[in-house]
Image: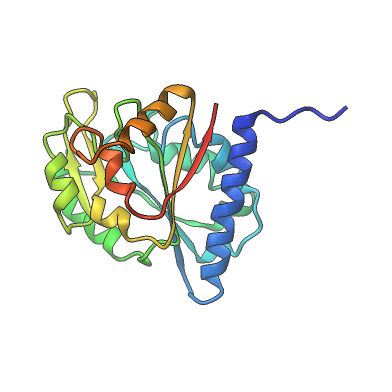
Length: 224
Protein backbone atom coordinates (compact mmCIF):
# COMPACT_ATOMS: atom_id res chain seq x y z
CA UNK A 1 0.00 0.00 0.00
CA UNK A 2 1.42 3.37 -1.06
CA UNK A 3 1.53 5.94 1.69
CA UNK A 4 -0.09 9.22 0.69
CA UNK A 5 2.33 12.14 0.68
CA UNK A 6 1.34 15.24 2.62
CA UNK A 7 0.84 18.58 0.84
CA UNK A 8 3.90 20.02 2.61
CA UNK A 9 6.12 17.11 1.60
CA UNK A 10 4.83 17.32 -1.97
CA UNK A 11 5.63 21.04 -1.97
CA UNK A 12 9.15 20.32 -0.71
CA UNK A 13 9.71 17.82 -3.52
CA UNK A 14 8.46 20.32 -6.11
CA UNK A 15 10.72 23.05 -4.74
CA UNK A 16 13.70 20.69 -4.67
CA UNK A 17 13.06 19.85 -8.33
CA UNK A 18 12.87 23.54 -9.27
CA UNK A 19 16.06 24.45 -7.40
CA UNK A 20 17.93 21.45 -8.79
CA UNK A 21 16.93 22.44 -12.31
CA UNK A 22 18.16 25.99 -11.69
CA UNK A 23 21.53 24.64 -10.56
CA UNK A 24 21.65 22.20 -13.47
CA UNK A 25 21.00 24.92 -16.04
CA UNK A 26 23.69 27.20 -14.67
CA UNK A 27 26.21 24.38 -14.25
CA UNK A 28 26.02 23.87 -18.01
CA UNK A 29 27.67 27.26 -18.57
CA UNK A 30 29.49 28.05 -15.30
CA UNK A 31 32.27 26.24 -13.48
CA UNK A 32 30.82 26.99 -10.05
CA UNK A 33 27.31 27.94 -8.96
CA UNK A 34 25.85 29.29 -5.74
CA UNK A 35 22.75 28.31 -3.78
CA UNK A 36 21.47 30.47 -0.90
CA UNK A 37 19.11 28.74 1.52
CA UNK A 38 17.24 29.67 4.69
CA UNK A 39 17.13 28.03 8.11
CA UNK A 40 14.26 27.14 10.39
CA UNK A 41 11.97 24.12 10.50
CA UNK A 42 9.98 24.75 7.29
CA UNK A 43 12.82 24.01 4.83
CA UNK A 44 13.95 20.70 6.40
CA UNK A 45 11.92 18.40 4.07
CA UNK A 46 13.02 20.52 1.08
CA UNK A 47 16.69 20.29 2.10
CA UNK A 48 16.46 16.53 2.55
CA UNK A 49 14.79 16.12 -0.84
CA UNK A 50 17.40 18.30 -2.54
CA UNK A 51 20.18 16.28 -0.90
CA UNK A 52 18.97 13.20 -2.79
CA UNK A 53 19.19 14.90 -6.19
CA UNK A 54 22.06 13.79 -8.47
CA UNK A 55 24.13 16.85 -9.44
CA UNK A 56 27.85 17.65 -9.72
CA UNK A 57 27.68 18.89 -6.13
CA UNK A 58 31.44 19.44 -5.86
CA UNK A 59 30.89 22.49 -8.09
CA UNK A 60 28.09 23.92 -5.91
CA UNK A 61 28.68 26.46 -3.15
CA UNK A 62 25.97 26.73 -0.50
CA UNK A 63 25.50 29.56 1.97
CA UNK A 64 22.75 30.91 4.19
CA UNK A 65 20.46 33.89 3.92
CA UNK A 66 21.13 34.58 7.61
CA UNK A 67 22.49 33.03 10.77
CA UNK A 68 22.27 33.29 14.52
CA UNK A 69 25.65 34.19 16.06
CA UNK A 70 26.03 30.87 17.87
CA UNK A 71 28.41 27.93 17.63
CA UNK A 72 27.67 25.44 14.86
CA UNK A 73 27.10 22.82 17.55
CA UNK A 74 24.22 24.87 18.99
CA UNK A 75 20.68 23.61 18.40
CA UNK A 76 19.75 27.06 17.02
CA UNK A 77 22.53 27.09 14.42
CA UNK A 78 21.34 27.24 10.82
CA UNK A 79 24.73 25.87 9.78
CA UNK A 80 24.07 22.78 11.86
CA UNK A 81 20.70 22.41 10.14
CA UNK A 82 22.35 22.56 6.70
CA UNK A 83 25.06 20.08 7.62
CA UNK A 84 22.51 17.61 9.01
CA UNK A 85 19.84 17.84 6.31
CA UNK A 86 21.47 19.04 3.06
CA UNK A 87 25.17 18.09 3.14
CA UNK A 88 24.45 14.38 2.99
CA UNK A 89 23.75 11.67 0.41
CA UNK A 90 24.19 13.09 -3.11
CA UNK A 91 24.93 16.62 -1.82
CA UNK A 92 27.67 15.70 0.66
CA UNK A 93 30.36 17.09 -1.68
CA UNK A 94 28.85 20.59 -1.85
CA UNK A 95 31.00 23.39 -0.43
CA UNK A 96 29.25 25.02 2.51
CA UNK A 97 30.22 28.59 3.43
CA UNK A 98 29.10 29.53 6.94
CA UNK A 99 28.18 33.04 8.08
CA UNK A 100 29.90 32.86 11.47
CA UNK A 101 33.47 32.77 12.75
CA UNK A 102 35.29 32.74 16.08
CA UNK A 103 34.62 36.41 16.88
CA UNK A 104 32.58 37.12 19.99
CA UNK A 105 29.97 39.23 18.20
CA UNK A 106 28.67 39.58 14.64
CA UNK A 107 29.91 43.17 14.61
CA UNK A 108 33.45 41.93 15.28
CA UNK A 109 33.19 39.10 12.77
CA UNK A 110 31.30 40.96 10.05
CA UNK A 111 34.24 42.08 7.90
CA UNK A 112 35.71 38.58 7.60
CA UNK A 113 32.33 37.04 6.81
CA UNK A 114 31.65 39.77 4.23
CA UNK A 115 34.87 38.91 2.41
CA UNK A 116 34.00 35.22 2.46
CA UNK A 117 30.52 35.90 1.04
CA UNK A 118 31.73 38.38 -1.60
CA UNK A 119 34.15 35.76 -2.96
CA UNK A 120 31.33 33.38 -3.90
CA UNK A 121 30.02 32.85 -7.43
CA UNK A 122 27.51 35.69 -7.65
CA UNK A 123 24.90 36.03 -8.99
CA UNK A 124 23.45 33.04 -7.17
CA UNK A 125 21.63 30.45 -9.21
CA UNK A 126 18.86 30.41 -6.62
CA UNK A 127 17.92 32.12 -3.37
CA UNK A 128 15.36 30.27 -1.26
CA UNK A 129 13.72 32.61 1.23
CA UNK A 130 11.44 31.93 4.16
CA UNK A 131 9.11 34.32 5.93
CA UNK A 132 8.01 34.73 9.54
CA UNK A 133 4.61 35.67 10.84
CA UNK A 134 5.86 39.24 11.28
CA UNK A 135 6.80 39.50 7.61
CA UNK A 136 10.54 39.15 8.15
CA UNK A 137 12.79 37.27 5.76
CA UNK A 138 16.42 36.34 6.36
CA UNK A 139 17.19 38.47 9.46
CA UNK A 140 15.43 41.54 8.11
CA UNK A 141 13.06 42.00 11.06
CA UNK A 142 10.55 44.88 11.35
CA UNK A 143 11.90 45.78 14.81
CA UNK A 144 15.59 45.48 13.93
CA UNK A 145 17.68 48.55 14.59
CA UNK A 146 19.67 47.70 11.45
CA UNK A 147 16.69 47.21 9.11
CA UNK A 148 17.18 50.46 7.19
CA UNK A 149 20.86 49.61 6.70
CA UNK A 150 20.11 46.04 5.64
CA UNK A 151 17.58 47.31 3.07
CA UNK A 152 19.87 49.99 1.60
CA UNK A 153 23.53 48.99 1.91
CA UNK A 154 25.60 47.55 -0.93
CA UNK A 155 27.67 45.59 1.60
CA UNK A 156 27.10 41.83 1.43
CA UNK A 157 26.26 41.24 5.10
CA UNK A 158 24.89 43.16 8.07
CA UNK A 159 25.28 42.44 11.79
CA UNK A 160 21.78 42.49 13.27
CA UNK A 161 20.44 43.06 16.77
CA UNK A 162 16.71 42.64 17.17
CA UNK A 163 14.74 43.16 20.39
CA UNK A 164 12.29 40.37 19.55
CA UNK A 165 15.07 37.80 19.04
CA UNK A 166 17.21 36.29 21.82
CA UNK A 167 20.43 35.91 19.79
CA UNK A 168 22.47 38.38 17.80
CA UNK A 169 22.41 37.60 14.10
CA UNK A 170 24.14 38.21 10.81
CA UNK A 171 22.22 38.50 7.56
CA UNK A 172 22.86 38.89 3.89
CA UNK A 173 21.75 42.37 2.90
CA UNK A 174 18.71 42.88 0.68
CA UNK A 175 21.05 43.99 -2.10
CA UNK A 176 23.03 40.76 -1.89
CA UNK A 177 19.91 38.62 -1.69
CA UNK A 178 18.66 40.32 -4.85
CA UNK A 179 21.79 39.19 -6.70
CA UNK A 180 20.31 35.94 -7.96
CA UNK A 181 18.95 34.59 -11.21
CA UNK A 182 15.97 33.05 -9.42
CA UNK A 183 14.14 33.66 -6.14
CA UNK A 184 11.83 31.26 -4.33
CA UNK A 185 9.67 31.85 -1.25
CA UNK A 186 8.89 28.72 0.78
CA UNK A 187 6.10 29.10 3.37
CA UNK A 188 3.45 26.92 4.95
CA UNK A 189 0.22 27.49 6.86
CA UNK A 190 -2.75 29.80 6.53
CA UNK A 191 -1.29 32.46 8.83
CA UNK A 192 1.77 33.03 6.64
CA UNK A 193 -0.39 32.98 3.52
CA UNK A 194 -2.42 35.80 5.04
CA UNK A 195 0.73 37.78 5.92
CA UNK A 196 1.96 37.41 2.36
CA UNK A 197 -1.40 38.58 1.06
CA UNK A 198 -1.16 41.66 3.25
CA UNK A 199 2.39 42.29 2.04
CA UNK A 200 1.20 42.24 -1.54
CA UNK A 201 -1.26 45.07 -0.90
CA UNK A 202 1.28 47.63 0.32
CA UNK A 203 4.82 48.83 -0.19
CA UNK A 204 6.19 49.76 3.25
CA UNK A 205 9.20 47.46 3.55
CA UNK A 206 9.86 48.55 7.11
CA UNK A 207 6.50 47.17 8.22
CA UNK A 208 6.80 43.90 6.29
CA UNK A 209 10.37 43.39 5.02
CA UNK A 210 9.35 40.54 2.69
CA UNK A 211 8.03 43.34 0.45
CA UNK A 212 11.62 44.04 -0.58
CA UNK A 213 11.44 40.89 -2.75
CA UNK A 214 7.91 41.07 -4.16
CA UNK A 215 8.69 43.43 -7.03
CA UNK A 216 11.10 40.98 -8.67
CA UNK A 217 10.07 37.60 -10.15
CA UNK A 218 9.44 35.31 -7.17
CA UNK A 219 8.38 31.69 -7.23
CA UNK A 220 5.97 31.23 -4.31
CA UNK A 221 5.77 27.74 -2.85
CA UNK A 222 2.99 27.45 -0.27
CA UNK A 223 1.13 24.55 1.30
CA UNK A 224 -1.47 24.49 4.11
